[in-house]
Image (tube, rainbow, N blue to C red):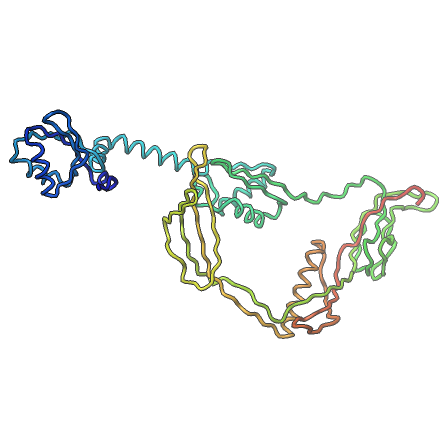
Amino acid sequence: MKNHWITSLRGKVLVKMEGRSIERVINQLIRSNISIWNVKRAGTETVTFYLGLEDVHNFRRAVRSSECKVTFLRGQGGPFLFKRTLKNSGFLIGALSFFILVFLLSNMVWGIQIKGASPETEYNIRKELNAMGVTTGKMQFSIPDVENIQRELSSRMDNITWVGVELRGTTFHFQVVEKNAPEPIEKTGLQHIVAKKKAVIVKMFVEEGDPQVKVNDYVQKGQLLVSGVIGNEKEPKGVSATAEVLGETWYKTAVELPLKSDFAVFSGNEKRNHYLEIGSLRIPIWGFGKPEFKEYVTEETEKPINFLKWQLPIAYIDKSMKEKENVERVYSKDEAVEQAKELAENNLKSSLPEDAKIISEKILQEKVENGKVKVNLHFKVVENIAEGQPIIQGD
């Protein structure tokens, strides 16, 4: 039975044969292993049939001595289609070029819109985006995905609280929430200055008001530091007390750290595979096979492909395989204590005001138990302990 797929690829010819000895010629073709099919009569002395393109030369030689008239009606299949395509190559090249051009333009970044940011912050955001490679005119495949852009931009910009990133068509949309800069305290009413927490006064700077304590005094939380009432008893005057009072405060913290721990680190070796995903089918286009690493972490980035305003059911997949190594870290007791002190200090700094300063630390207790070192520490901190308290009538 003739394989129609192979025949269509190789090409076939529709032949019309006329004459009195048609049957004899057909038998001769069969004996010569020349395949013909779909033989149909078109009259008493006329038949049509298909002949493989590769058998045309042998067919001509076989029927040359017969009295039959042979006419090749038309050719079909791959070679003839290719020939007709070459005749219309201008149209084909134009259509293909148009498709490629529209495809590239549909997957290019054409705009970056930033909302919610001041002009200065917007300028800095665009500067950081340029450094990250997110610029107009670049292909979307060559820039980081939305999640990575959002994470990287948040880490680089100190003056923004949150940034939302969305890719709509060919335009990136950024929604920014800026941090509120601390504004100067407005003197909207009369107030005293009291202590936020217990401390020993180490420095005072009184801008307005009557100081009630001095340096080296020990004060309790809520104690009056600077009075907002000035003047004598006969003619008192209320003001909005303003002062900076630095006090030595104290913090205790406890930290546990294992002496032995296992963790994974990346060696720096990486293998990348690139795929074109159509539905559930993945077609590799660059980078083949699995890595030679024994252990690795796989990360995949999927970027949809657009055509004009439509998102095609096709995606570009960038698969990264990074080699990892399992490392066992073992601390001695002294090393573990030092690491615990550093960890405790970092934790404390994260909860203190920016202008606070740790001046000393002391280990109250340290012990090793169940494979862990447990450390209790005492920190001395200098920070501003002043806070305003409104003056109530009758004070």
